Image 1: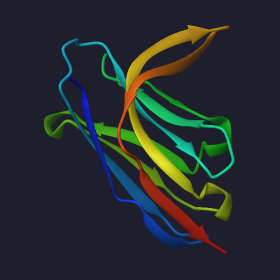
Image 2 (image 1 turned 90 degrees about the vertical axis):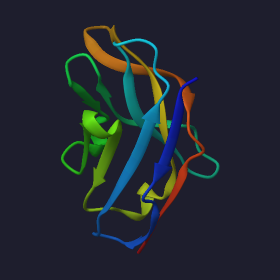
Image 3 (image 1 turned 45 degrees about the vertical axis):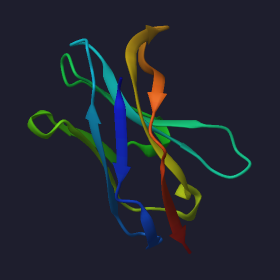
Length: 125
């Protein structure tokens, strides 16, 4: 059973930074993706970024490119999301998720089938 445990959320002022961590375990296949999506109150889930275990390639939502960076430490089975230049609109619960990468209309994307309990990120103005 895949287990994903997030940490690192909190309250930060606009322009600040946070680093989220996701400790992952229980994978039975070698080719999978781990990433992050977020959900703000009253809004739909929004993909943030994901990373492939097979080749380390990443996918990041366009609006977050340049501010958010995903990385992994395979020795620690941990995936990180470094978030810089945070904005109030980044306020949401951030979920670590696991699944697969796929190609859609020539673009790589991630689809998830399991996720953690989430960590709250609040950005004050």
